[in-house]
Figure 1 (cartoon, helix red, strand yellow):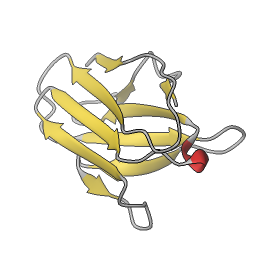
Figure 2 (cartoon, rainbow, N blue to C red):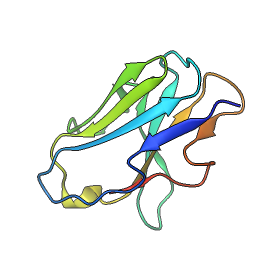
Figure 3 (tube, rainbow, N blue to C red):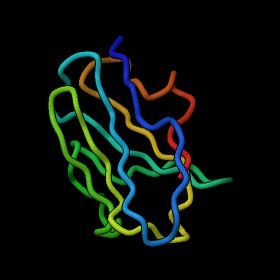
Figure 4 (cartoon, one colour):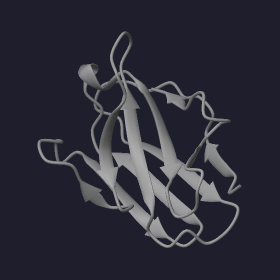
Amino acid sequence: DIQMTQSPSSLSASVGDRVTITCHASQDISNCLNWYQQKPGRAPKVLIHDASNLETGVPSRFSGSGSGTDFTFTISSLQSGDVATYWCQQYDNLPPTFWPGDQGGDQT
């Protein structure tokens, strides 16, 4: 299976801050990467697909970049409603894999 490594594993930020999360794949996954957001008590939501494409309705303060093995997720100006867990998922190879071990992400 492809292993995904996300950094930082947790972070603390304030409203207005620029937040950056990186994700590394153990092998080339082209641009086959999703970024998810999960707010407490809510189902996970895909914010970005194909590494850099925003889902419909996702605010432009969210962005993604990268290809191959290294990817970046950015919130340009953190809002209070952005408090959530964020994680990357590769879907180039089955099974799709998350960081870390399909059970979590970065709490922002």
